[in-house]
Length: 428
Figure 1 (cartoon, rainbow, N blue to C red):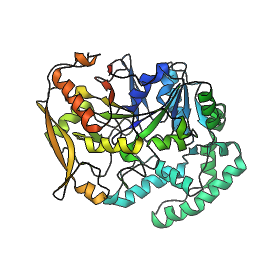
Figure 2 (figure 1 turned 90 degrees about the vertical axis):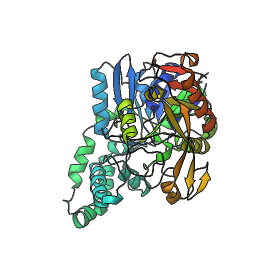
Figure 3 (figure 1 turned 60 degrees about the horizontal axis):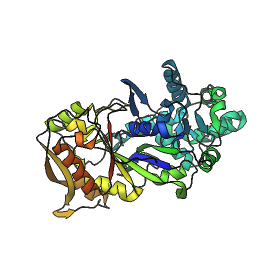
Figure 4 (figure 1 turned 120 degrees about the vertical axis):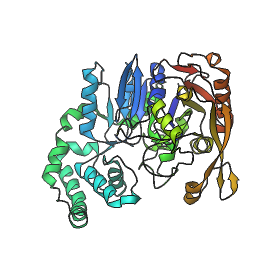
């Protein structure tokens, strides 16, 4: 049975949660391998909307084991807020597993995130302020707190003391904030420890044994390719590995065990936060896309920046992820347009390129080169087969497939789980 990675081909918010959820009926385990509660996935089931931030989308499918793997940073309070909200709606969360090696977001990480972002001013990154980046920084600096540390109070206290030795100097002397005490941090982290204990597991062992037993695994990325800390639009990126390689390091499952890599892309492009965005629309068309697509952040509520489909970005995502399949979502948003532009290349200082510029300055100044396709006016939300789509919508998708360099296996024509056209099976 396959192991499938599902990730974003753009800057996030492409509909990865829906894509993962659609695989749920034939999936045994869904693994979140990166990020934290800075990413929001919206899943609509029978008209009911579920907004997930930290939990894997597989938690909504009965029988599926949802796993928060070692590559994730966990805000324990947020985790249980999500669990409580789902359980009130009748969702069984008892199967959830959390890696003992996952890092924990401490209160001082949230504080550092907010004050440093404010301090940057015009140079700000556009973080969510939830402590994600500082927690990953602690991880790399080897002063982080892991889930397993919550069950040894002496070790936990020592780690908090070590982290606060440096952070309190910064808070007090640089940012003019009060010092954070060890005791208040310890109390905050220990509040949920015993409730978390039954969910904690050696997840690399569990996942590899599941594959040995022939079970199907889906690895769900928290963010998207262009936000990857190595391969994204650095420094306007997240702090974790969002590409297919991150699924391996973030879960403890080796690359030879991955069968397919599926990227999700909107039929246009959006991003949240700062950073370059070649096809961004700052006019009435951009606002029209925002309103038609409901483009507001699941986690933050911030209006998303909007633009036309960028094939250069998606081709790059195909390159660095080794994509086997592409899922295109929200094509219904484009209904009503007479002509639809698609960016097929960039103009960089008078030179045309169809490849992602290696220089960040070139990417920042890149101007999109568009080809225009005919639009359609028919309601496509009820389409369940490719032939149900208007000819113009079919040609648009065929063009995207051609310029993106990856086959389109699934098309989203609405927010619901059922509002999907399957062209090629992703599992099987």
